[in-house]
Image 1 (cartoon, helix red, strand yellow):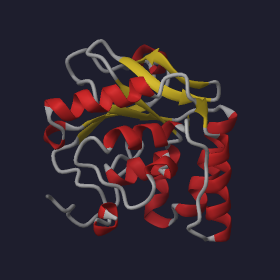
Image 2 (cartoon, one colour):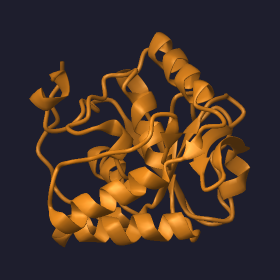
Image 3 (cartoon, one colour):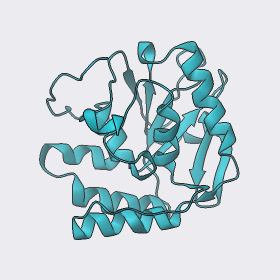
Length: 206
């Protein structure tokens, strides 16, 4: 499988910016195909964070703070995200009261790539939330195995973003449907605001 050749996606050119509560990214500072990481308090967000803390330890534990991800699909800040009620549209302003990180893909995504990213996110609208995927991730974290399962036509927040990002240079080391928000944060080196990211090896470039 092509993805197994790379320990991390090729993210050269991507950048991130942190926004605290009551701060928000202005139109023009992002492009459709970029995404956000944030910290939610819903039941699925808390379950994800608990699972992430089992996998991310030591210096990498900072990445487990992020437990939700959403895809930017318009220049005005429209989002598509997977929530407990399913994959739906929302807007970046929704997260203004919270801390979030804006991840801009930069040169790792062409104009065509970005169109494909947005097209995938729009295709996934109205999918059910991937509860079975959450169960699969939990079992693999607890048991230490690599066997995963889930339903076609269902998504978790970070899995939706990861699958959309496959239309760019991002090639993940495991099934994108099982990528967690902390995985995205680690790959793109996005710690919570004010924290120093762990040192990482240079990422491979195509």
